[in-house]
Image 1: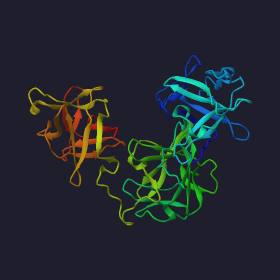
Image 2 (image 1 turned 60 degrees about the horizontal axis):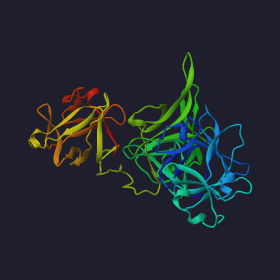
Image 3 (image 1 turned 180 degrees about the vertical axis):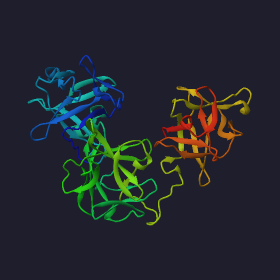
Length: 447
């Protein structure tokens, strides 16, 4: 896949050798640091030249604009190590060419080649974990396609949409958590218990910064949103992609939220608000975005394996459509306390117990499926097996079948005995059993 740099999109520059990212420090030095996905100091614009062949590397920090510059080209020309600097926006910025290494990679790798006249063999180099330098290629580019990984870089979009990866045409299906597909008929969206056919095929193209256009293969137009005469935003189709860029956000599991920025008007003021595709019975409408199950969608490649056409998909590896089996840290949604297992090796398994009440001490629990609808949560700590259970109104360390139920907010769950009795954290070390409520909602982290 060729390297495509999109205008106005924010990128990060990652070392292939060490996995660290280019970062501007407060003293305007340039260093390599571990992943800080939300840090503005690791975010950059690649500003193209008029012909798009070379780029200026500009900080995305609006409070401190500036560019990556070569501070000592003369040293490099003499075969010495050169240095990098961060120059202010009113200085003459250097330009860099992206020379691609692996054209078959989904995340293309490139060399960053400095482009001042007469110095077309100077490369960005990371010889040690934090030693960012300029080095000269004495072979004058003959080794470019065989260079070491210290010379290789990934240009990574800072806020990608994280769609299922493909090297072919980006054609997808969009489905509900029950497996029903979004269907287009006469420019109207509906939900139908089928998945094949171009009525249900969408070309989703990333425009950078998490935004995408969504194009239906059947009616050959773009999904868009307009305000109707009642002041409500509604889904329409348009022949052009103007003002039709959607934010596609991957949730903590395998689902997505699909929203578009529009103006929300009230009697006293107006402000920009994301409106999300929302399931309402057998139709799709726009509602203000929030964490809700009816705003969560499955997005999959159109050539993905399907079950029977007229039946929703079932998955033996899922407790619920949006919760897969696997290992998790289980955190209380109200107070962020984790479930932990205290293994008492001195007196035996009987004295070991499940506990709560801690923000930092935590135990990774294995979530397994039991029968058609049941589940179990277990762990192994210092060779002692723990099984989370509910018995006689108490939390016990005993193997038994639990029921995981969706809570009122997407991504939050009740852990119950199937009869309405739920495990809760009461802000002490002890886990308790209560009726379902705010203190008994749990988040499953880090499958």
